[in-house]
Amino acid sequence: MKTNDEILKIKATALYILKSFTDGVDFIKLFKIMYFAQQENLVKYGRPIFNDTFHALKHGPVPTFLYKCIQALEGRGVQMDVSDMFNKALKVQEAKVFLLEEPDTDELSKAELRILDNAVNKYKDIPSYTLSGKSHDKAWREAYTRAQDDPEKDRISLIEIARAGNANNDIVKYIREKEQLKRTLTL
Image 1 (cartoon, rainbow, N blue to C red):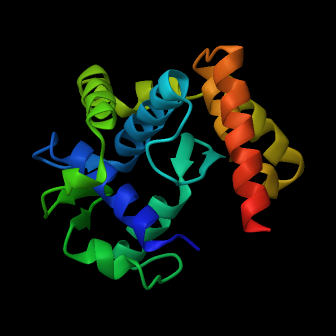
Image 2: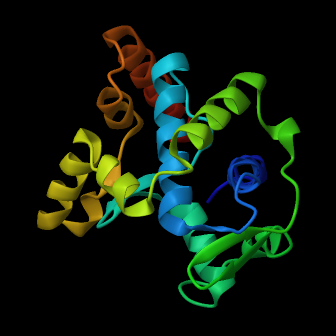
């Protein structure tokens, strides 16, 4: 389960992206912008912007927790208590997400805001199906291939995301050490 701080960070990230789309945005574009921003932050700084696990679905990487919250707001999928945090912030209608509340930018660092701005500016005018194809990078392909044998293996690791973004070996090593430490502390 996500901590309250992790949920607030995911929410702030999604809302910050959504503020650039006055007429709402479809799920695919939102999720792909989040993926590419996450990837850029991993490559540059060795850390994720937000703590949500990407899974390799048909149309590319999907941030699972946020997707489940959006599904709950639509009235489908698993109903989640945390969807209340998103009820006043997002509106979901006809496969599009609309901003109802300003993002809490205090949840995001200046560097993260720059990365998010860069991702929005780079991808907001690209059609969703094109972004979907672009997100079918090496990380997605490996996880999607694994999932054909075992559907539970569709998770894309932070290291896979960073490598697909051409992270150097020092960054990959740094991410690995942080992930190993995190795993050790949660055992």
